[in-house]
Amino acid sequence: MPDKNPWKPVSSQRMYENPWIVVEEDQVINPAGNQVTYGKVLFNNVAVAVIALDEEDNTWLVGQTRYVPDVYSWEIPTGGSPIGEDLLTTAKRELQEETGLSAQTWTPLLHLHTSNSVTDEEAYVYIARDLTIGTPAFEDSEDITIKKIPLQQAVHMATEGQITDAISVAALFRISLFSRVK
Image (cartoon, rainbow, N blue to C red; front, top):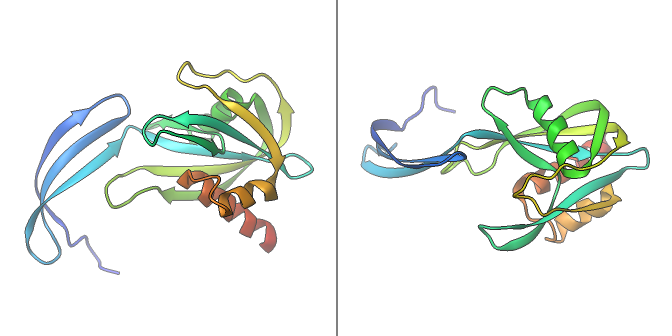
């Protein structure tokens, strides 16, 4: 592992921004010493996701149509944490908003970079246990279907390509391994 980053920034220009992302175009010197153009997407939020588990190892998935890939997607509850907001606070809010659930016990499960070649997006995933059922509070951009299923069925859906959201797949595979190790 190198001691320092071999990429050398020369200049950066902001090309676009909205409340969720910033797109920049950088001129950089690559590790081979050549000047190249590098595009990057910077996120204004940190992704926070939750695998909620009841006493029988059932979990909750949320289904919704995702605009950019134009697909209906089954996912674990996920939302954006504004930079500087406590991640667990976000996890609790997103679980309640998308499923109506609240939890007494929270365990960190996973930290990952979702597409580290062109974005700085990070994701954190928690396990929520000791659940209380309540009423969801969807945002106006959400048209969500909620599904309670056995955790192993959700893992199977990810294995079979029925769940393709990267954060959900990584989290389900991780918890599947975590469950076997404990």
